[in-house]
Length: 219
Image (cartoon, rainbow, N blue to C red; front, top):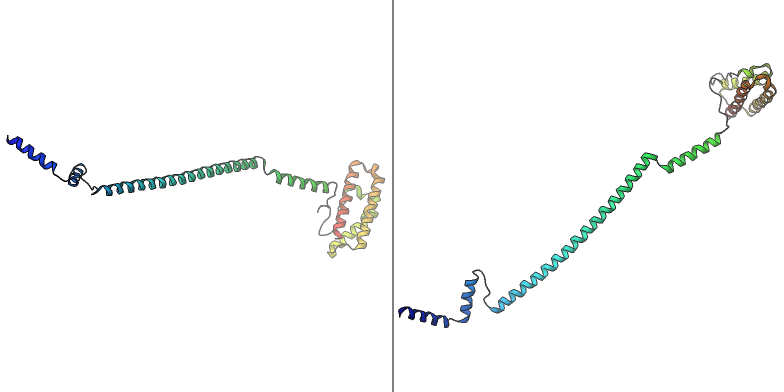
């Protein structure tokens, strides 16, 4: 009987406990931390939480797009750099193997033009053929024949005088020396058979180079 009476007393107390207090007590029992004091406050907290979650989602989505765009840009830049490095390497290899074709062609054309312009042009006498100090000329054996002395003697005198005075040929001397050179060439054609092929070719080449030396002496 005593136990039955205590149970009935406990049930009566539970029935008359206010609703808010019951909510607070049971809420505290279920969540030992902070809890909303009213239903309206709880709803506001829920809306705020949803709003914050939505804003954070949008921010995260925007940042992800920026990161993806930057990553794509880096990929494109890397591909461009790889392509540039590849072609530069190819060009370097070609230049190392074949050289610069354009520069080589230009130099080849220049050399060919110079060779074409110089072809057949006689060079000047060497220092062993014309002493630059004394002006003495060493004639080839074919031009030492008596038939050429009338031409070689005045030419010798003109070059020796030039060396002594250290001056260039005058117009008159230039004309006389050239006239004597022309005389030697004519006499060479006359003496060609008697001189032989080798002596003739040597003497004729010497006279051509002597003419170039005469033009230089008059300049």
